[in-house]
Image (cartoon, rainbow, N blue to C red):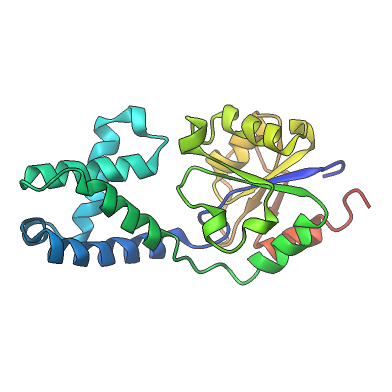
Length: 230
């Protein structure tokens, strides 16, 4: 772990638990749909919103890197099916994104970001559509690379290299931190970065290629990096 100069950091399930957020967002949005587009509400429950998005994911692989557009297209199809204006899909996806940013940060996150950003350049790298500037933590980051803007998603090495360019640091000196064994750890390592697995649930590692380190939260990451470059 020597010679680390910068950190790229995953968001969903690394800084907050994502599925409670999505469940709540879909439920609240479904209530709005019931009130505004009653024909849809009569024929589809909240779980259908996710199923329809997944259907678009299967039929539009060209959009697999852009979760926001996948969601919007699913709304567009649904509106058109029931005779509503498909342009209303833009309002629906905007409402969804607002709800999607109502996250509860893990308690270790802000203290760790504060400590890490004082010593390292930090960038967010995510396959999702969260924007750190909307979450009150943007000041800890030099910038953000999302799959939608990169045109590819993790574990594609290109998104990691874009993060390194943003950080102005050679991949060998960048540490990627995330919860997903394939998308975060192995993807980063195959791109030439070092990687730390954030294993909040105490899962077993099931791959031959192992992370450079494993931590149970970001407070432990701060401890692991305490002596780096001192």
